[in-house]
Amino acid sequence: MTGYDAVGVGGRDLAAGLDFLLEIRDESRFDWLSANIIDPKTGTPLFKPFITRQLGELEAAVIGLTGPTGPAAKPADGKVVIQPWQDHLPSIIEKLADSHAFIVLLTDLGIGACREIADAFPAVNLIVRAGNIDSGAPPLFLTDNTILIGTGRKGKYIGVLEVAWRTGAGWRTGDHQALTAGKKERSRLLGQINRLEGRPELKDHYEEIRTRLASLEITIEQLEKKERSAAGTVSSFDNRFVAMDVSLPDHPAVLDLVDENKRSVSKMNRRSLSAAGAKDGVAARGFSGWSACAKCHRQQVKTWRASRHASSYLTLVEKGQQFNLECLPCHLTGVDPEDPATAMGITADLQAVGCESCHGPGSMHRANPAGHRTAPVKREICLGCHTPEQDNSFDFTEDLQRLKCRS
Ligand code: HEC
Ligand code: HEC
Ligand code: HEC
Ligand code: HEC
Image: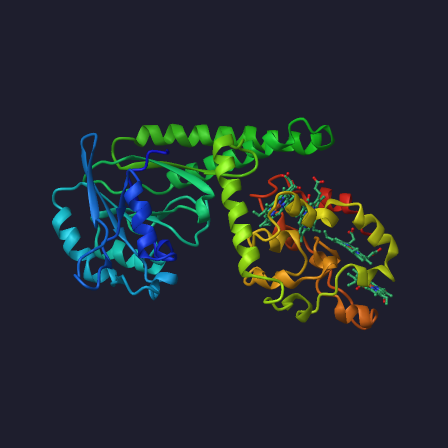
């Protein structure tokens, strides 16, 4: 639907086995690329190693390389082997470099490998890398000839990279990076303004962001002017990352699709992680649940029970999402994000953003209040859940006042 030409096959794409992946490949209207996923029986690649495209005047090529990490490192069905990129890339580059002025690499290899590739193969001009990367970050200059951009995790950002490529001239640095950063900040501020509009109680905050935006506009204009006067002597790019956050309206048809998918994930989890099978890892890590605090902190419990934190699990239940592991760490207390399945055996008074979500595990304190003080609640604790993606108008000072936890 978005008009992709090609997708690079990553190690994790093989998580459900090769047959599953080939089935969706065959249903799609774009190419799936990997030069180093090999059929062990025939020794040949299972996907196209590269494609070529005429882009205006430019002969361009797109290569796919798969990293050795993820479940694919040892695919359970033994139907594929991921060979080292070193075994395949050199011969492909040799084939393409002379006839193709612009070469793109799609990969989930680590940053270290990407640097090695940029150093060894200046013909690779752009690396688009999937994996753990600072989402929405401006492109990274690996060399004068090669830039790297990250695509952000789990499709949560859409990236647009416009390229004005001059054969023989490298990329530019300096002002352009400042401009890219400025534009990124501008789109962040615009998102905040969107959220704050129509909220008179946050008027001061709104005005402050407006002022910041106005001065940023001036800086951007000056940088753009400089850039225009230098244009035509170097290659350049312009990138925008658009966060798929709450400020963007959902497309109803896509939302239905996503909701349906989430419900089926939740259902599958309910089946595979029956409460009996899951150990109660939460209690083991020292969490008590809010009712254990009630005896001594009645005032806090009373205010808290009226807050949205207290009903955060109900929110999931209403959406049929209480078995979706992805939601649990932020909507329940004490869930280990690395192992959210342990929350399946959780007691009812941990089914909320409870006291211990902010104050930390309380078993020791409860037994000996003066001997085991709780740690101060820092901003970072809130930000662990109030991420920009979930809540892009979070303001520690303001939101803290709404909690009214101090007696
Ligand atoms: C464990 C995750 C988590 C932590 C930690 C957390 N929150 Fe929340 N917060 C949530 C969730 C989830 C909701 C929404 C609950 C719902 O509506 O179902 C929420 C809602 C809120 C709301 C209500 C928002 C509204 O529009 O009414 C405020 C205010 C708030 N949080 C402030 C804070 C502050 C301040 C901190 C840190 C001191 C904090 N939160 C820490 C998860 C968390
Ligand atoms: C990174 C932490 C985090 C994760 C993961 C998370 N949430 Fe939330 N959720 C929050 C916070 C924080 C809020 C409160 C946002 C606000 O105050 O605007 C919230 C609010 C909500 C709300 C009520 C607010 C609204 O926009 O209507 C719903 C519904 C919700 N979450 C559902 C889910 C579901 C379903 C999942 C899993 C697919 C999920 N959340 C995963 C942190 C999270
Ligand atoms: C969303 C985070 C959050 C949750 C949930 C939360 N608190 Fe707090 N609590 C705080 C913060 C932050 C403070 C520091 C006081 C302040 O600045 O508001 C605080 C302060 C306190 C204090 C010290 C009061 C004082 O006067 O100094 C107690 C006691 C307390 N909380 C108990 C609880 C109990 C019991 C619960 C559960 C019913 C709870 N808190 C839930 C964030 C939270
Ligand atoms: C047996 C009574 C008792 C229970 C149960 C209890 N507390 Fe406390 N709590 C206290 C006392 C007493 C203090 C004051 C300690 C002091 O000032 O020496 C305190 C202080 C606090 C404070 C202020 C900071 C600090 O540590 O001094 C927080 C926050 C807090 N408790 C959170 C909790 C939470 C969360 C729970 C539930 C897991 C809980 N308490 C259970 C008695 C209790």
